[in-house]
Image 1 (spheres, rainbow, N blue to C red):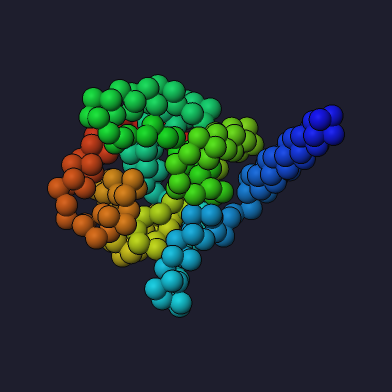
Image 2: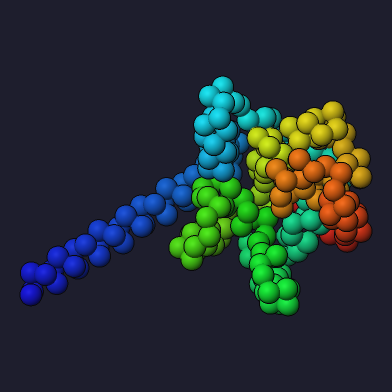
Length: 232
């Protein structure tokens, strides 16, 4: 029996060490990406793999642009659509989570998540879309790493450059050219609001660009845009 418990203790120690190594790897990546632009993300890799199951030659549309070459309207629209208190919290907006829970309870189903831009970035960079308590816990840990290491400006810059905006389309530069034929620096208020309105379900709205729900979402984003703060 004593040998069995020694084995359990050793197994537990090995497990803890593995978890710490994984967290250290995540942290090193976050520090690296504070200075170096990521060429891809976990979400992008997963999507490309899915696309190549149907077409082995499939490619993602993705182009990086620096923060200053993204229109201020697009920055405001993204914050207005996804995280109105972006500049005020440390990665997690507990107030938004509580409001989302109340809305979901009223509707009897999950329609709002309350995730911040930083949480979405953590998930996009490292994780997947599967829902589990373990994945959510890991997402929170990475979120706090990102907030501790990066400025809000850098967080928003990476997010806008890697977020999915259409079927195989990633980043606002590719999204701007894909939908409107202009660069991200040339987006006007209406175009920016429409792109931001697509973020929760980009593939669906890519197929349904004239849907009433997209129109309504874009109108809400337009109203909120002048009420939010963005990093300079």
